[in-house]
Image 1 (spheres, one colour):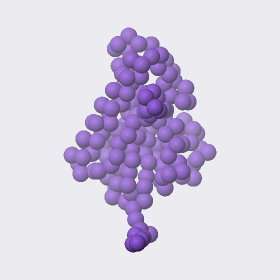
Image 2: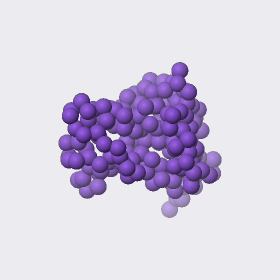
Image 3: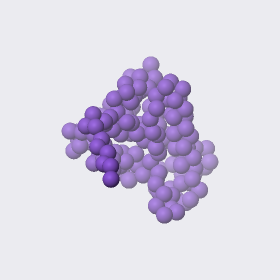
Length: 166
């Protein structure tokens, strides 16, 4: 029997949660290119603002969501929110691939059995905490201080960043 030993110099891993308001920011793409050259990168892209806009367009109530995420009233609302997030996922994957930046892009949606469950993207950071060496939360400049407070208990490994808008 042959045993394969992995080199101790394997690439590390990094988890990035990015706001749906920031994922197309050119400064983010420059930053993630450098990160992906050193780490296997998984990005969780949000889309709360876009989901709110789509809900309003369809006449669904737009409510403030709690720490666990958006509480949709029915399957149709959960599916609409998922569709918006999947559009963000595809747009980010495509944009990064065109620029030669290869990462894995996820959305904060779980299928538990056959039940569609939305998760606040910030909770995904907490879920990924024990598996990833580096964790980043990318937010808007306006939300930066609030997010730093929110992740202060994990500040040894979670870095909260806001990029300037150009």
